[in-house]
Amino acid sequence: ADSTGETLRTPIVAVLGHVDHGKTSLLDRIRGSTVIDGEAGAITQHIGATAVPLETVSEIAGSLVDPTDFDLPGLLFIDTPGHHSFSTLRSRGGALADIAILVIDVNDGFQPQTIEAIDILQRTETPFVVAANKVDTTPGWNPQENTPIQGSYDAQSDRARSTLDERLYDLIGDLSDHDFSADMYWRVQNFANNVGVVPVSAETGEGVPDLLTVLMGLSQRYLKDAMAIDVDGPGAGTVLEVKEQKGFGTAIDVVLYDGTVTADDTIVVGGTGDPIVTDVRALLQPRPLAEIRTEKRFEEVESVTAAAGLKIAAPDLDSAMAGAPVRVLRNRQREDIVEEVEAELAALGVTTEEQGVVVKADTLGSLEAVADALDEAEIPIVRAEVGDVAPRDVTVASTADEERHETVMAFGIDVLDDAADRADVEDVRIFESDVIYRLVEEYEEFIEERER
Ligand code: GTP
Ligand code: MG
Image (tube, rainbow, N blue to C red; front, side, top):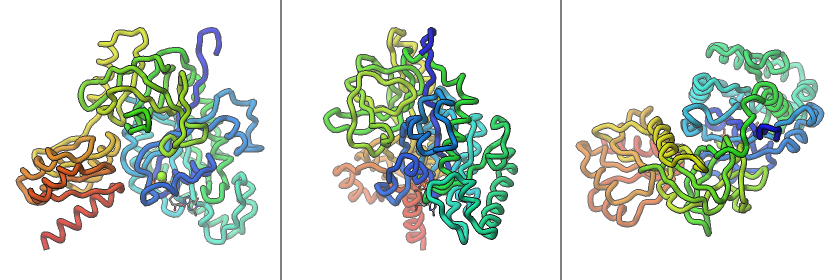
């Protein structure tokens, strides 16, 4: 910290892209883990945060970087589902991420969620690099484990190289159709005006050194001013998830993007009802390189400074919502901060109709994602809420005008016993899944079946 108390914080890097294009695999490669093995249908359903220290970044980047060129402490990666819930990644109405990696499968090219991600990046003016992933699937590819892409290129046949080049130029063409001037990253001089494309393989690690080098370079060069924060100021963050934490009751997973939170602080958290004002019971941090979503062992700490992923345990967090703001009160007026949180929450939410199905989900982010998927499939929603399926949800569904709306969609939650009983009696259909598109598919199949 310098004399003003300002320190450079870790840039927050969002990893975005279409389903299955390799976001989690790429992060697994960087952190040396296998998070995808533990996922339902190998699809990321929630958003997770992983801190990668500068030491690890420079270890992977090897000869491409000189760690003494950097004074940023590392990178905080946020993995997102390929589904539509990046809208959870908000901070003060803007983007939670300082910078992003747009992962695109070189074989598959631009897909709906690629375009959606690009729109969000454009709208929020978030600088990004493109990771052109799965280069190892190029016919005739000769894999070069963990090497910088230039070395890997040199080891390929002319044929393999030109096939890959063709695919990469198609990508660059697609980017320019979306008003982004893009080029291979080594030809980009000014990253503020041009998008760099980095060929990578999460499978072999080729190009991963380049990707990290570009990210560090970009952050160091363009984000340094924005990264200077008053570390001692009251913390501000966004809720990623609300979960039971063994021995602590309900806790929230948070990405802290400003200031500090201590174990003695009072916090204000956005919830389904009025903002929650509560005293921190415990701050829990995953180990470095561990993913907050899957980590089982947490360390209890006295204070956490941005940027970081952490768990906050406190009383009354049951009604907290994923995607909602978290503010440390410190010595500010309680009403002011509550008002601030309310204003931010007003900007979130799902649109409901007079008639439609009932949707219940585990987080505001997944609720939005399910709602988006239903909207795309032109299935209207009458009620959308975070929480387990309760009898009153079944009652709402049972009063629908049309038989096909006598339905409850449950994503990543439980159906309470008395709700299931009532559904039997009222002839209400409950669809349950941990995979959004399956929920929609099952519903559509059911309707088709019935209308036949
Ligand atoms: P969602 O979380 O569902 O959006 O997917 P994701 O983008 O996180 O993709 P994920 O990492 O789960 O990878 C999808 C599939 O592609 C898995 O079977 C991976 O093993 C495979 N895959 C990812 N990267 C590569 C790569 O570089 N090369 C090859 N050959 N396969 C890859
Ligand atoms: Mg994933």
